[in-house]
Image 1 (cartoon, helix red, strand yellow):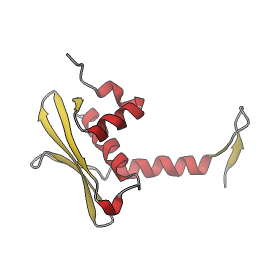
Image 2: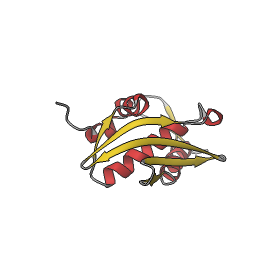
Image 3: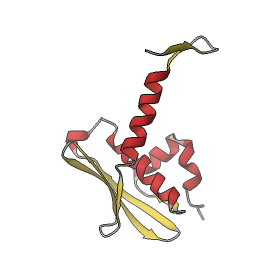
Image 4: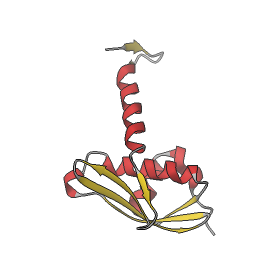
Length: 120
């Protein structure tokens, strides 16, 4: 285990942090856009999580997110949101978050707040 002491006295497991970053990268790269069905998809353990949207460039409106009960509480919804928002960023779109889950995810993760479309 690679552990080092931070300036404030907290100990940080750098290998765990790297593993988490790698896991986020791999899961985010498994998220795919299915434009024919207007949704982003993430397959995990034989189930598919979905983030439905309506597209009217340059705006994408997230309307509903579905995570199968079997995957609940495992971070699959967050991985789906992160991957979808990374794809949206790469496409140069702005987000309207009608879906409460996507709205809460963006609020909790400031690195995605710049994607929000101006209101009004």
